[in-house]
Length: 200
Image (cartoon, rainbow, N blue to C red; front, side, top):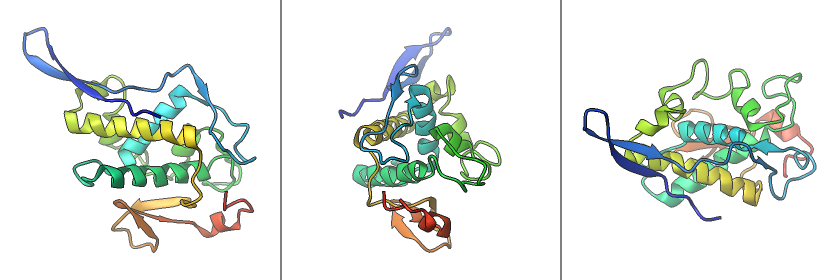
């Protein structure tokens, strides 16, 4: 899938001062999507473009930008691993409770106490990617946001990757043992290991 180009466009405000407007290529909100190459657990799930854009915003907030991880390939691989964590939690019990089963990525992201960018309260990076605040993002942050949107689209088109069987991640500096990818550390919890289809 071709990558979109997030643009920062100069415009004049009402006082005639030139300001830059971030214009990422969002996923069409009203369209519905299915994840390619899904196993039975997720084969029947559908996702709105709005749900995928929300996921892209969380991914943008949780992943390393170019300022922290300069190599584009490293950022892409980190994002793919992160997306596989979100995916792993779809349609499963225990994230965080047995009575909560996420059928959408928004439900995965909003599950109580799971992701630092959203809880206990949303962090600025997530807030600033919302409409209309994203329009004020600088060139580097606008590009980082577009990379996250592109990564979500690539994941939907390609499906889950068995190289990244993880259900948790933290920053690289976290004390928990795990696999370092980019600037993040990944692992599969005991709960995840108990899942009969954890390899898929």
